[in-house]
Every structure is written in C-alpha cells, then in structure tokens.
Length: 303
Image (cartoon, rainbow, N blue to C red; front, side, top):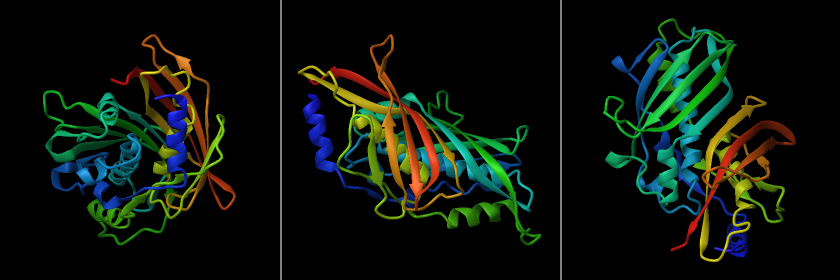
C-alpha cells in the first residue's frame, strides 16, 4: 500500500470509535489457594467478540493493558492494611511476541483454548509505596512452555482511608473492586486535521479506562507516519511494543481528549523502524495523564 492508501484509510475512519463489552476483560476473582499475601493468580477470557471485526489490528493492546491494571489492583489488595487503598501512579506494559504475531495476523485467537489468558500478580513492598508485577501467559503457568503474552509493572501510592468492617476480608475487597468496574470499553475517536507531527482525539463517551485511551492515542501517533517511503508491492505493519502511562490525577474513567505525537524513525539491524510516541490526556482543560510507547513498523511484500 502506498502512503496515499494509508492516508485514505485514516480519512475514512476519522471521527469513528469502537465500543466493546468491557465485562469480557474482567479477571476472575482469586479465592482459596489462588492467593496469599503478596500474590494472586487467575484467568481472564477474551472471546471472539473482542478479537475479530475491529478496524485496527492493535485493538487488543488496549484491552490487555487495562486488564493488566486490574490484575495489579487485585494483587495490591492481598498486601494492604484495611486502612489503605491502592492508587495507581504509573503502569509499564510490555507486549510480548505472542501479541505481535496475533495482531499481525488480524486477530486469530490470542490464546489456545478459546481465548483464555492465565495471569499472576506479585507484590514488591520493598519500594516506596507498592509495586505489583503482572504476567500473562497463553497456556497454564505449569505448562512446559506457557508463552509469555504480556508483562507489566504497576507502581501504587498507598492512600489512608477509613477502615471498613473488621470482618472485611481480602476476598471481599477484591470482589467489591471487580463489581465496581466499568462493564465495557469505549475507545476514542481521532479527529480530522492531523499533521505529520501531531494527531488529536477525543472520547465520545466515558471510556471505562484511560489506560486504554492512552494505548489508542500512541497507536494513532504511528498511523500518521505509516506508509512513508513504502514501495509499490509492499505493505507496512505497525504494532505497539510497549507503553508507560503516568497518572497526573487520580482519574480512571472520564471523557478525555488527547494529543499524540510521533518521534523520528530509527532503523534497527533487522530492517524494522522504531518510533517513540508520546501522548497527553486532558479532561476539562487539565492534564490528567501522559504516556510514551515504542512503535515498531515493518515492511513486507503485499503478496
């Protein structure tokens, strides 16, 4: 596809947005032997309704980044005092090769066994606040080769709150958290009028996750560069390899607008182009979050 073809694709979808059932990415509630202090594990189901029929092949990244944040919250609950609440400060997500392959093939099932993901969350209390490391695999963790799908680290501040009932258990706190989550994901729309330096976007309704909005914003930054210098008979795929999102305010679900900016291309030894993208999320004129992420663009024959 020539640069003009990618530009025409951008023009065609400007102002559109996707809404997906968000309950499909709620992690299972750990119980019994699935949790102990500082650790928990479970599963999450991604059905065909999530994996197919989307305009852009990197859509699963928004779902998985938000899922990682939710799993990290569950992990944090296992190590908290009843008078503490975890408030996320920063999340760093690395999308492993399994996701890149799935996206490049336009969403075959992300995992064998009907889209089941196996996750774990481990707490590190040796740093200021609390850090939770999340790992997702396509196969059960005790399989010979579970195949890492995503790795994430979430840094929390611990906020003092009024203690709940003395009988409130860790499982109850996790259950209440899951029950209070938004039940769907409304991804933002990018707006017409972009340049090669910046693209703007806006949430048409409450998104359910500003982490997911940030993931989409970083991807949009790459779309305005896609196809530069591509020869006839070639296509250029684009994937987000990693992202870091920093909360500037304690806001998780609000109608935000964003500005996303790509940096210069840099070529690696394998012939792939890498672009560092940056995005700022704004609500009512206030900057509430900022994100960075590395995009990888690869050219291949269109045949």
